[in-house]
Length: 331
View (cartoon, rainbow, N blue to C red):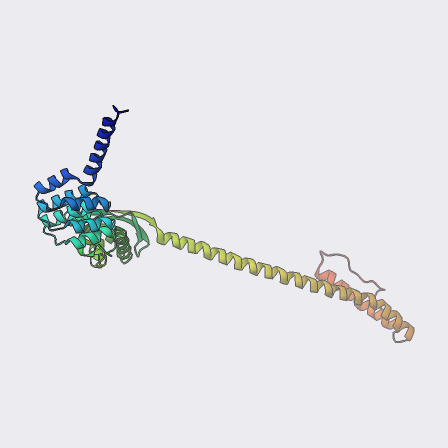
């Protein structure tokens, strides 16, 4: 047991040394000292306690000091604890300083905390980038559809990165401008002959207002002819008018059929009344004979008149046949 005591003491000493070196990064302090960064050893210990990586802060301080950027460890710690990307901010400040772009540490941290890549923004400000719009379909006044595709060259506007609209807004506004420009053209041929008409009209609208970018140019990459929307709409309208006319004609036909059926019903009712009246004629004649109001000679004369009427009908309509006198011949 006594032989194991020195081993435990050595192991405990090593563990304590590791813990000491973890909380007191002497090598990092020496590196900062030789790099011209004034940071205390005790300050590095406090960074460990505050759960701030000392190497991250010291390395960022070294890069900033070598580039002539005036920042303090307190500012970098504060930005890190706020959830910022400290190395990205330092790179952005160095790039902006080399490109003579006015950018303060406060602006850079605000842009970073706003969720934007501040280093990429500075790079875009120095080296503009091209945004390709999706295919934008629009219809000229002659009814022909045109499909245009544009390339928008933009540069980051550092002063409007916080609160400014992004690429989606730029694309939406450019698409709207293309649709308006094509729609205001009298003929699609004019647009095909001079595609720069679209870019000129769109640039005049100031589409980059309120955005995080400055539009440098809008170039029409391609213009294709689509469908004849005007003719298609006219065909659809004609089909709709035809269906309406057919519906109205069907309505009129149905009304005519109804009127015809009604007239037939009335005619049948009239014929029934005539037949009923004809049935009552012999009864009336018999009653007249019995009452003495009709004599035999009057009856013969009536029969002769009926025979004359039937004969004239047969002469006028020889194909029908029949007829003739139903009584005795004329006297």
